[in-house]
Length: 116
Image (cartoon, rainbow, N blue to C red):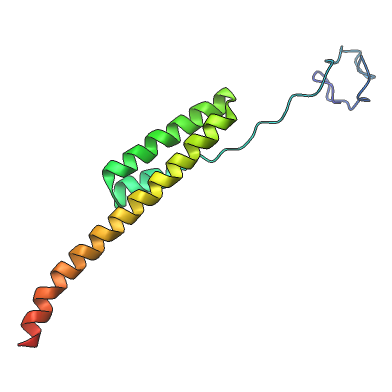
């Protein structure tokens, strides 16, 4: 266990720091924070380049994920992160479908004229 005052490593069962005599906390050490990806960057990119309505939903879930993670509620943060990722994919797929639709809609008249 490390002393919070001087940073010296002490035995796990020690009550005081061997260097500065600072009282060490009892009980298990606090768990390190868990990283939960928010997918905010992908949500913003999908909003700009793919499908705005679904991208905005992804941004909202990404913001919820970040808020829950900073509050320490990692289960809710993980669920919101999964929802953000799902809505990013929905936005991407919808945007891709629209782009393909418009590409085909523009090529049909051109091909019809070139055929005659």
